[in-house]
Length: 290
Image (tube, rainbow, N blue to C red; front, side, top):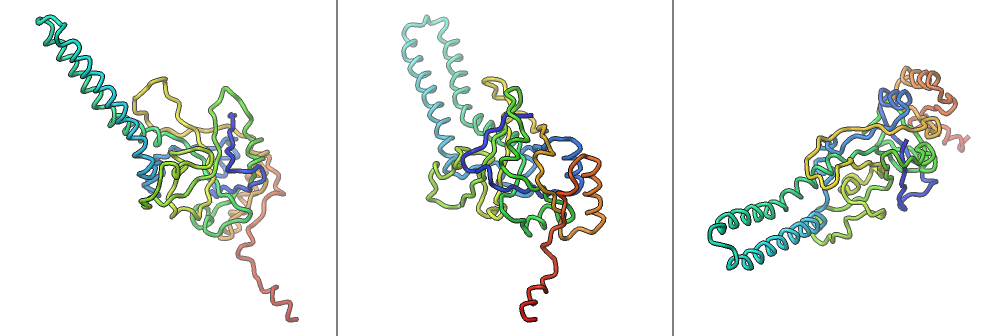
C-alpha cells in the first residue's frame, strides 16, 4: 500500500465516484489495487492533458533561461580572465573547451522543456468524480453499461495505509482554468493544494468535478533522461474503500447480475450493490392529484 497525502481542497466527508466498465470493476476487486495510468494515455481525449497555461509555462521557462544566461556570463568572464594568462600553445584547446561549455549552456532551455513534458507524461493518475449524487453525464461518458463505485475521502484514506516504503499518493481537486485568458498569472495556475502539472485542466472539462490521485515517476537524482511512460498499481483495501456499487441505469439485467456475482466471489457485501434509479418511473409524483 502507499503513503497518502490528501490536500486541503478535500474534506474527509467528500463523496467520490469512479465510473467504470464492468471489466475494470472486475479488475479492481480481483487485483485489490488501484490502476494509475500515465497522463500520456489521455492525449486522445484531451490533447492539453498534463500541460499548463502559457503563463505558468513561461514562468518556468524563464527560470531555465536565467540559469542559462548565468552560465553563459560565467563562461564569458572566465574567457576574459584567462585570455592573457594562458600560454599560446594551449589557447586553441581552451577556446574549444569553452565553446563546448557554451553549447551545453545553450541546450539547457530546450532540455528542460523536453524534461518538463516527459515528467508530465510519466505522471500516473487515478481519477474520481466528486459529488453528493450520481451524474448522468458521467454515466454516458465512462460507464453506460458499467458501474459506479462510491466512496469517501475518509474511506479512501483508510484503504491506502501509510507506508513510507511505497510511492507517495497525492490526492486533490483538479483546478479548471481558462487557458485562453490573456490575464492569467502564474499563481492562477496553481491548485489550492499547490499542484501544477497533471492537476490543471481547461474549463471545458469542469463538468467532471474531478478529484485526482497521482503518483510522480521516480527518477535518479539529477537524471535528465527521458523515461518511457508506464502505468502502475497501488495496493488498496478494496472492501474498506467501496461504500456502494451502483449499476448503470442504462445497463441490462445481465450486467447487474454479473456485478452481484463478482461481489459474491470477491468477498464484497452484495448488500451494497444497487441499481441506479436515474431512469425510474416518476408517475408517483402525480399521486398528489388523487
